[in-house]
Amino acid sequence: MKQKDIEQIIHDDHTGMSLIVKTVARMMIAVIILFAFYIILYGHLTPGGGFAGGVILAIAYTLMMLAFSRKMALHKFSDFWASFWDNIGMLAFIILGFLGLNSGYFLYNFIWHGKPFHLVSAGIIPLANIAIGVKVGACLYAIFIGLSIYGRLIIKEEE
Image (cartoon, rainbow, N blue to C red; front, top):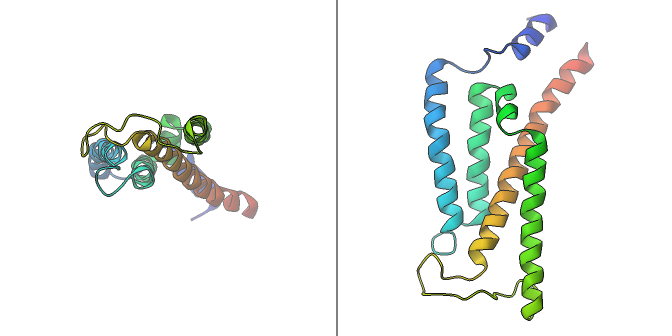
């Protein structure tokens, strides 16, 4: 296959996988995102948490990129927004840490703990899980974007 044909396939708006794969991926992306939010929110009660939920969240966007094309995935969630949410997640975690510092020490659990084994039962831990989930999800998606760009750079250098 010639370089010209490869560039035409890359820039074609109708790239991506077959209709069956796109249809299944469209349904699965919603389920995966919902499951990621569940893992992030209930991470203090069940195995999981911010990191595991963030990885699952990144998988949903990676599936979108693989099934529909890189162009469509970047249209939905661009590299700018991936970097933005990565920074927001880290900033939220640091703010939680310094708010705890006002009450005693860094990451001190200063919020009322509630009843055991309920959703509001862990103080700042669910908030920290949300911050970590946002950070990990956006960061892993940004890494996948970077890896997909790297392949295009090699093709450009070979010209």
